[in-house]
Amino acid sequence: MADIKNFYDAYDFDNFIRPGDEIRLARQLVLSPNNADLSPFADCKIADLQRMREISEAAETKVFEELRASLSKWEEKGRITMLLDAAIQYLSTPEVEHTSNLWESDGHDRYKISNRVYEMTYDIWEDTKYDHNAQKSVPVAWYISWEVSTRNPSNLYYSCKIAGLSNKRYTDKDAMNKYLQGRIKAYSHLFTEISPPIPAKYAHIFKINGLLLPGYTVEKQPPQRSEKTAAEILESLGGDFLLSENGKASILKKLSATRSQEKAQVKTEDVNKQKKGEFQR
Image (cartoon, rainbow, N blue to C red; front, side):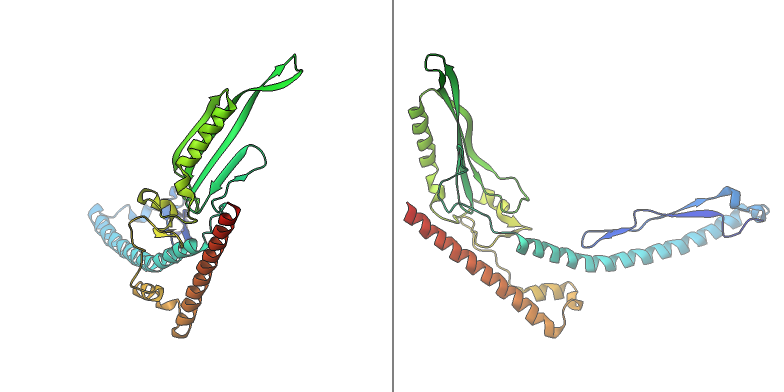
């Protein structure tokens, strides 16, 4: 005699949670005909079975709605986790490295100058030919490549190329140097400040989750400020469970103080680098 409760298999799949991102709950029921005993139903009327099925379906749907309600509760908590992840990512973005508007060499034929917003690079490749009379290789042409681009502090976006040219060929080295100096002069206005104002079309590169990174400004745009504190935003999202009344002020005050110290340190370093650059020039 078949086990009356062993007439199906239940499968769980795609059951997981990514906090602050996604939750999945899935279960499937599959009939096992060899274990099912339908003989007691053979004498039933279809109409009666159909009616009982409707009742069973309604009960099943009620459970489903309860599960959906539970998912809504997860959403309330998940959105807070998501917001905190976004803030942590913003605060964890490291300060972009730069040359303080000074030209630097990689030790070969590649040079660069950069600040917190722009970078310019150039490299020169010398083409040589063996001179049998001189019994040595002599240069016959020079190829220069150069590029001006935005910086990429977050690695969330590609840097935007502003201008550049690859493998421009010269047979006169003096002419090549004259061309290079002309390109450097044409874009020298981008390298007079450590953190020049960002054109609006490039602003997204210097934002993390919609917020401009510290120390940057966008041309003709006022600084982005919120009228609410972090605590107020969390409370409005139902995040009272995160912080006790005693801990709330101290944690947020510490966070604010730490960030202020970091900004002050960055500003001091930039000023020192700027002075160093002016001294070396």
